[in-house]
Length: 59
Image (cartoon, rainbow, N blue to C red):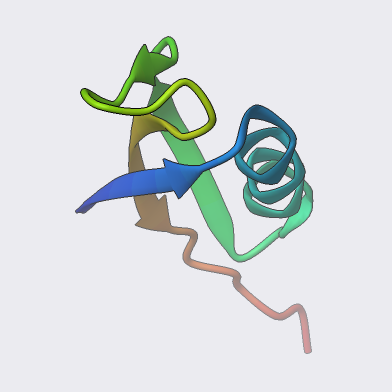
């Protein structure tokens, strides 16, 4: 499992969350709400927990 901190604008974080969710090799366990960074109104952070998916090939 990986714990990832995402930092950027609201739209950047939403864009990357879509990428994480659409990748079939990654299972998104949890994504936190947005937190505003101190000292700026432009940038936010969110936290994600992901793990790799074990894909089994049928032969």
